[in-house]
Length: 179
Image 1 (cartoon, rainbow, N blue to C red):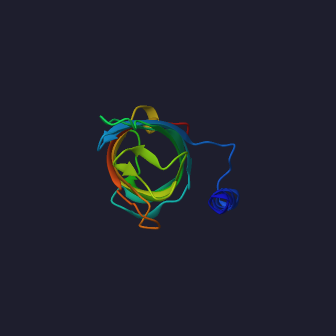
Image 2 (cartoon, rainbow, N blue to C red):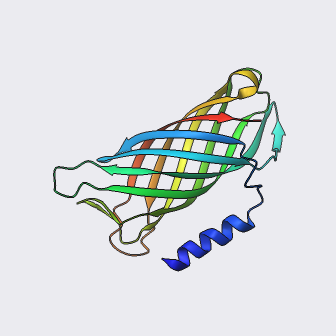
Image 3 (spheres, rainbow, N blue to C red):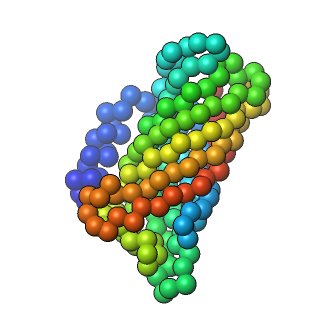
């Protein structure tokens, strides 16, 4: 566990973003297989525009979030598990943010849980899990300040240690951009 924390801290320290200049904040909520999720997050834009064509480009951002996974089950095990994560995310989006601007995104990151057990049938062999997601959304408002999106996320420990039940989540995310 100490090694995992050290790796995350070193990765954050060497990342190419200024920790003071947050580009956006987000609120995220949803549910999955007998699990409810609530998260808050901070994002740092990479300020890159790759493959610009026809008014679209590929960009990306760092997403650092903290939240709670709440297990819903009929058994005595009904835990709230704290979840912190760091996820680099690629976003294919419209370049012009003066109108409604749709986007598509994909990300894969690392999550650290406060405990391994959420419900009786949702027990991971490790507190370190991977989270990957695909999402769609829409930026709107003056200069695209608001962002409303849907994400499908899968959490799994990638069979590092059994058990590895994995879980799928459906999430709605609201984000406010500062730039």
